[in-house]
Amino acid sequence: MTLVDRFLKYVSFDTQSDESTGLTPSTPKQMIFAEYLKKELESLGLEDITLDEHGYLFATLPANINKEVPTIGFIAHMDTSPDMTGKDVTPRIVEKYDGSDIVLCAEENVVLSPSQFPELLDHKGEDLIVTNGKTLLGADDKAGIAEIVSAMVYLKEHPEIKHGKIRIGFNPDEEIGEGAHKFDVEKFGCEWGYTMDGGEVGELEFENFNAAAAKITFKGRNVHPGYAKDKMINSIYLANQFITMLPSQERPEHTTGYEGFYHLIGIQGDVEQSTVSYIIRDHDRAKFENRKKEIERLVAQMNAEYGAGTATLELRDQYYNMREKIEPVMHIIDTAFAAMEAVGVKPNVKPIRGGTDGAQLSFKGLPCPNIFAGGLNFHGRYEFVPIQNMEKAMKVIVKIAELVASK
Image (cartoon, rainbow, N blue to C red):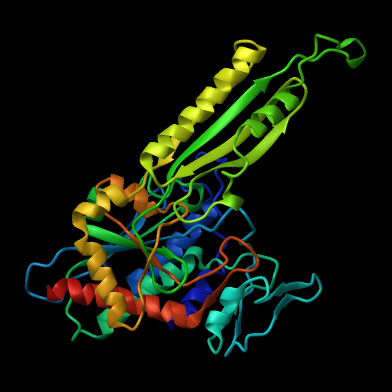
């Protein structure tokens, strides 16, 4: 089975995660995919294959060299985003893309156009795998899984490439921020790892947001509107007032690079009670802490204005910037950098405006930067992946294994 065949098979599995269930994996369909992968890894002759009750699948490619070499790992996630359905994904290949519009779904007029997605033009002449305009594709992160498995097959078929022991890990629920929660780092047994979960070719990431979630509940006082003067407190207006108190220029749509933000992700309510939900993000730890303090200050201000208990805050940290765990072992970045250059890929070191499982794994004792998997426009109907991107990612994995053994 080729890399492309493997990827096309993987995206046929619906593996959407769901943060509302409280389970791991959050959806049983992820376990169906995990069991398929387990059988595939067994058929390929990998060793120490384990699949636990939470959907964490580990396997080993044994070393083929008689010297002490660090054990390294490659990791990808099996779930797809809750943002759009991953059921009945119907991919097609646009061969030798010519730079024009790609009609994904004529009946619904869904068009993948370089006028809206100029990054398409970076891939003229390449072979693009696209959706039918009705689902996401699932390159995030089934491209990563296909690349890792294909790299292990390549190394088995080319014993002249010397490498140490390699561990691979596929986990559920990355898209809901819980992919690393039950990842057994000790059992995985690596000195360091790489998540294959980035986007465009060359991406190499070891900085990500510090992240928190905030939910503010506003209590109102409902009185018959005909007799409401000086009595009614409408919680919907309280919620709206709070929203306007946060700086409008510090929203995702107005920020880039290292700039943090407050992102309103949900609002629901009636006169009696309303709730707003935010995610808070910043690369700088001090600025991150100040953002949380600002939310707390504004909640206190609302209570001072309308009475104690009017606004209640639930605030929890989600993950932290892995940079502080990667900097002491920067040789793992140097190795990835050298591997990319060796296979003709220009490294593009950039901060992640988001998070990966690698961030949480780094804080659990497994330093784990993120490498490109090659897909673009994740989480929606316009997602696509150039086949050539996946091939380059696979070559980077192989070269990293070779470089680690040669040092």
